[in-house]
Length: 360
Image 1 (tube, one colour):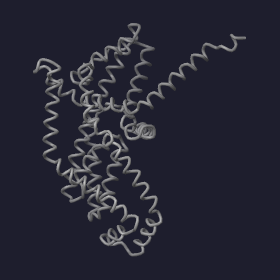
Image 2: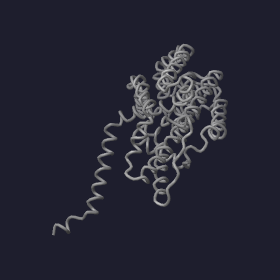
Image 3: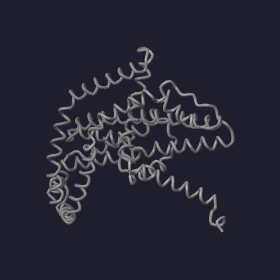
């Protein structure tokens, strides 16, 4: 009777499902700590090329890490002195003006200002005003929710100190961590497979993070200078914000353009058509010129799968989930490819480029 009730195969399946459920619960419960470590890994991959270049001339990895951090600190201080006061001024101005702008939307006053500038008929203005007044409560509620979401990163401002500190350990001990993972293999075949997986993930993350950082930097520069020249309000706030959205594949750039255009409308900007051309031209250059040259084929994930990953990640863990969803998909793809290959034939060990990642 006990033999019929106890099925070893069913027990293994139930045990595996329980392990996965407990792991998912742990990841969800520790999501803030894991997010901190994810940003530390990102920062380590970002700094690694500088460390690799300095390691040989300075005759030591620790010296190279210290020198790289000193260079970054000097750059941050220099940029802070150059545009820091402008960013602070625009931030205070936007925080003060935004409630008044939202009130203008709810009351319909903004429609009159925009309509007069662009020659709208009185009938059209009246229709839009009636629509906004009828949904004033909803507009204000959504605006409040958006403000709360944007204010969330300010609650973790102290991460700006912890992230570089944690990144020191990844830069210093990246090889030891990788070797510890590889040594989990019990046979020569398992060790070879794990080494290949670690090598592929290391190359993929290094290429992806550096490419995304370069693309985001280009966006920040283009938006900040271009919007400033076009006399759009808050260019040194909108520029970095657009650069941050650039890290979210596919959806992020669209959100950046919508945000810039919305702010322009709220501030009664006169040249909306020129602004539309400005934003569209950059997306064409970024998507069809810069991204293929800089990003290359570091992910090899179809755009539809990227959109699915971003939406799913955003639903599960908000902005951070959307940010890391595509690298996670790429990691799962590497695991599937390596494990599938291991069943048929043993693949050669991946040889890493000198500066491909934090694992040397």
